[in-house]
Image (cartoon, rainbow, N blue to C red; front, side, top):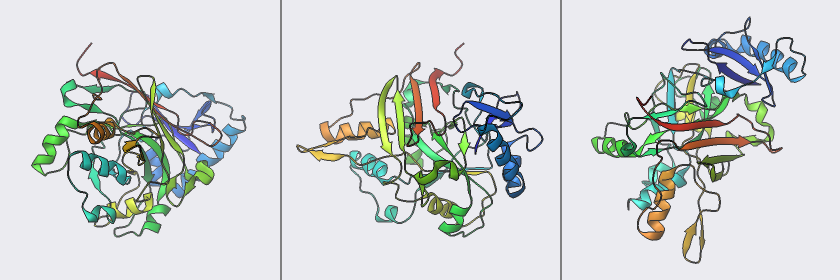
Length: 337
């Protein structure tokens, strides 16, 4: 089934069930008013939501209405936990190679993960508000899962069993601020503003054969200012699957229902051609493009996002249908207007 949260003036919005083709929706009133409520009592509430989803997909829901992504908050507008991994090691390798630093061996056996701000997520069509272009505004096209309860020291298998929903994410990065924070060696904070998520979150069964061993085998499509810049395969190059990422997050503490765990920027390695490394499928963030330019030409040529820029992130199924709906955002100056 597919779930979304409509804006209603409150912090947590109203839970709606969305049809498989993203054409219609139905309020989940009487079953659960908020997604967190459903996650807290998933075994009891999810079957009722599934029944409503089935009726909606048959076109028999009495009070269905056209689904409008612009009215959506993030599926889970605020969460108890937002832990973002970096499961695509090509992303790490590129950025470090451009900075002339090696990737430590442990990165290949233990996931990277940072704690993100989870009290105020962005909806799929909300503006990316930034005070200054000098902060070096970057997008990051990612996948994320919402979990049920996860025990401390969970195994990767237990982690996979805890996956309740999947969604897309734009994990916005302010690269200039991140660079300064890394020097302080206390983790990222100001360099990671509010993350945006796709209009709908979907249960793993909605992905069919594309959901295999904790990975989504579909293409992440990223469009910047109307130009498609990324067609990255999310499956084969994901070094650590979601079960492993969840288990890593739960190594020393339990995770409560409603925890969100991210994949990191979806990234594929390039190919060598005529002595140059090329990008056959594009990139999932600007930092990767700049790293490639540095490796090839000695210096980056591509600038970061500017006020007025637009971004679209989407993933389509094997039949060409939009799975999660699209993240469609504009970069805007904070305080303007």
